[in-house]
Each structure stands twice: as structure tokens, then as C-alpha cells.
Length: 168
Length: 335
Image 1 (cartoon, each protein chain N blue to C red):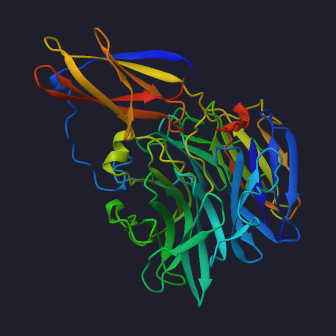
Image 2 (image 1 turned 90 degrees about the vertical axis):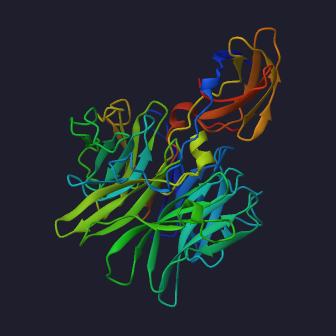
Image 3 (image 1 turned 60 degrees about the vertical axis):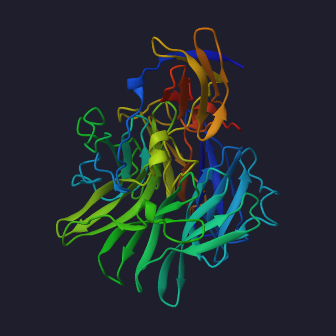
């Protein structure tokens, strides 16, 4: 068992934690003031994931991914400087991103359906800055083919792509 | 990476596993004869994954081995388990005690009610509770989270009737099915005038706040909507960790990928001019060892068992001059 000393605490009487009144449960006012962000540039958001830095990542129709900072503003360091990115998908066009996940390296994995009528599915991966991760599949995306009548619905913990399954 | 896919066209479900470079490692389909239609999947941290959906017209929860996709024989008499009156289950989460919780929708007598289904860790029993709502309201759940005390919060798209504007409702249910008023009971997220708003997916962030994504629709068209709802009780906010598992539909909680530290030591010193005569420390309500030293006392915390990214160590000291000092310190559980 590894032991590591983290910190020394010099306790002083003044260091006693002050009591603070808890905020009432509800929409978080630290997120865009009223807890709700509406993004006119994007259609409906169909999947959401929490970013490691406290931000929020959403996948929307028309195959877009947006990154919000912890305060609810679009992250200018993501995508084309407007907080919005378009993952690679070859000539496919997503109609319904059904899931989004973030792996241990902060890469964003999006699962969706393209080519209406065939319901083939696609998995795309973005780097943390929103650019396509060209080390993944065919320049940032890979097709996943199943029975044509089966559509994809979910990603189970994409971070395991880096660590592999583990038990606890 | 493991993905679960399902559909209703053939009644089959399956899953595909991808390598980190995006190659298909293996894929399976199953259940074509049983009308399986699984929608959402979550890993339970013990090498298994749990999926919810519909089997032969009934809500179902199935548990599988992640390694070979075989049905878990320890899960119920036969998997999947009939989850009661729900006609379909949509999203799944796992509570701190390993219980599996799902949301779904019941359609009966022209009503569309949201339900929360709780299954025990062995899958032999599942109880369904209807989310309280005004008479005639149509409800469609979009995801849920489980709080550390077992309360379930579910995000619901609600409309007063067919064609009526929708609104986002977050309802928190105690294990006995009653609304948890401490978490706001049944709250409505404000919608701009003349518009309709509905949720489609949820997630839980690292602080235990519920994220709700969906759409706002009005005369100017449709646009993306994201809400962050803080339903934590004061104790939860103090810990500010991931509650249990709480993953929600169509989404992932913040990455829990970390290699846990083993034991962390915190050295505690008295203020100048006095000495410590007694000390105790707690993490999540549990006592942890405190060792007395010549110049400082040491708190030893084994963080390897915690799934949350950080924990709060609370230390209480008594000094020789009779004072009681309290201090809380955050300890990251990951290297």
C-alpha cells in the first residue's frame, strides 16, 4: 500500500469553517444566471456530458457539438472559436446524435445515426479542443454497422477506451 | 469502448466494442426471438453492464458480463426482469448501494405517466412508482440521477395535454415514492413566454449537479437548451463529490477514470502556543484513524475505496486550553 504525505495543516482558531446558508435546490444561478442556457445557433440538444473542467458538452441535431464553460458561456477555446465543433463523419450526416461521452484524456466521443433509411451508426471522436481526433478510425470517425434496422442508443463509459475494463 | 445499440425494427439488441483507435473489436446481437429492445446502458463498476428497455412489451432491466456479454446468472431468476407496469424503460442509473434505478413511461387509459423503477442488487424484485403529476398531464422522462441517500431525481418533459406546450419538470422521489420537498419536490424550470421546452438527455457533473439538455421551441424556431440544476443537500454540497453513480440517460457522468491513491496522510498541528490533547477525523460520516505524534497528529485516509473524485476529511481537535477546532480538507482520490 502506497502512502504519501499530501499536506500539513496548521490549524488556528480563525480557521474554523464559517457556517454558510445553503442555497435552495433548483436551477443553478452560477450557470448563466438562471441555470438555463439557450443556444440560438444550434438545434435541439440530444445528448449531454459533464466535462472534467466543470463545463458541459452537448451534442445536437445537424451533428454539432458545443462546449459550455462552467458559467454557461460557450467556450471560445473549443471548435472554431465560437464553442461549436463539427465532428468528422466522412460524407455522412448525423440526424440524431444519441449519446456523447468524454474519455480520460478529455476526448469527446459522439454516437449517432447517419444516412436516414439505412440507420447505420457512426462513432466520432474529437480532441478536447473540438478538432477531429485523426488517430481515431478514418480521420476521426468510424462506421459501426449492425442489422440495418437497429439504431444505436448509448455509449457505455467511453473513458474505458483508454483504461480497458476494470473491476472494483 | 463499449457501446450498446438497440432498435425496434427486428426486435434485436446488441453491442459493439471499439478499440481506442476506432476499430471494431467485436460485436454481438442477441434476443431476436425475445423482442428485446434495449435503449440505455451503464457500467456498474464490477465488470458488468446494465441495460434497460423493453422486452415483449414490458419494461425490462438486464445485466450482462462486460467481458463476454453473457447474461448474469446472479441477476434475477431469468434476465431480463419484468419491471412491473412500465411499458418501456428509457434510462438507467446505479445508486450508491448498487441498486439499479430506471425511468420509463406507462401508457394506459390514454395517460402517459413517467415512472421510476427500483431494482434490488440481485434483480429479483423491481418496484415502480409513478411520478406525481397534475391530472391529465403527459409525461416523458429524459433521464435521472440517484442521490447518496437514495432519492431519485428525474427530468421529465411535461405537457398539460395533447398539443399543449411542454415544460421541463424535475421531480425528486424518496424511496417510498413520495416527493422529496427538501430537494424541491416537483419543480418546473422556467420557460420563456410563448415557448415550449422539453428535455432529451441528462448527465451528472462531478459536483453532483443534474445537467439537462433538450430544446426550446417557439415562434422563432427551435434551439438547444441546457440547464444545470443543483439538488444537493447541504451535506452533499460540502462533499461536492459524485453521488453514488447517478449516471443518466443518453449521457455520461464526468469521467471517473483515475488510478486511486492508496493511503493519504494529513498532518495536523495545533495553533502556536497550545497542544492537541485529542483528535478525531471522519470521511463521509465514517471515523478514520488519527495517530498521535510528537509534533503533529496524523490522519490516515484510505481513499482507494472511494469512487468519487474527491472526498472531504473533517477533523475535530481539542486543545490543551480547552478549545475545540474543526477543519475540513478536500483530498483528491486520483493521482
